[in-house]
Figure 1: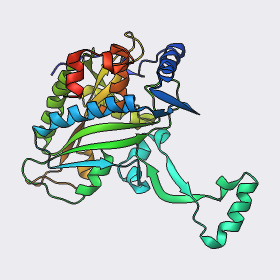
Figure 2 (figure 1 turned 120 degrees about the vertical axis):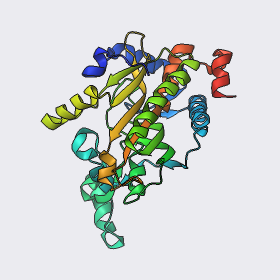
Figure 3 (figure 1 turned 180 degrees about the vertical axis):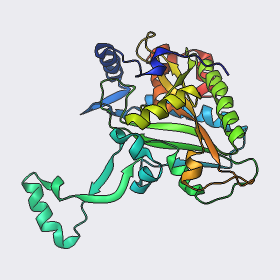
Figure 4 (figure 1 turned 135 degrees about the vertical axis):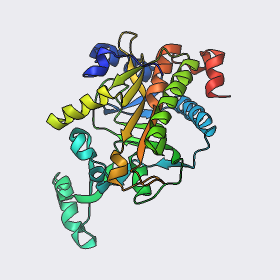
Length: 318
């Protein structure tokens, strides 16, 4: 495995000038690939855009198939709010947590609610629903393994999850709603690290076959507070998080389009998942950002996929 340190991986992600990111976004609008909704980072996606997404999704599925995953899931955007707490996400990334409120007053409360609507204050009549928006694609998987003792060799699961992160931006790579195609291993510690390392190499090969200028860099999550800084330093020192970066807006500022992470025994402890030998299970995942890879391809090869190199098209639509 080849990984390099980059300045962008050590601190904050590289921030492209707003004029460049907005210009590329406007090109996508003009080509009809994305359609504005009036909210930054929330767009309608054209069939041409989604065709590329499906091509990438299929390419990852074909790569994962050789390992014969034990299950394949599609996770929705909405999750139990308790998951955000159980996974420790709310403590680690409070800026990204979003809960759903809704009308819970029943039929008898409807007149008062409609009166509130007429006076423009209906949102004050909403109450927590016990639901939240998923902020990490693989997190809904671990509760399904709660309390289990895994067979020797652990479990390998392929999944596609919708993710919401309230980070409005003119940068088309910072969508508020996006999808991750992940391949997750839960089991022995050495096997988890090996899974991560194997998929870094596979990820590099997949992206390069698509003609992308990609490299692997050691990175860290933007944890908060003193404890968060210690967690981030630990991620870097142990190379627990690797990002595959490629240009989306300009060659000077590559963006993470996929990532590969070792979680150590965090989810094993949290959800009481053990291995056949009685040890706490470790986990690792690789996540392919379907929309970001699509944007990287559009930036590299042009906004009309029909004109892309034949070799790239064959990778996506065999």
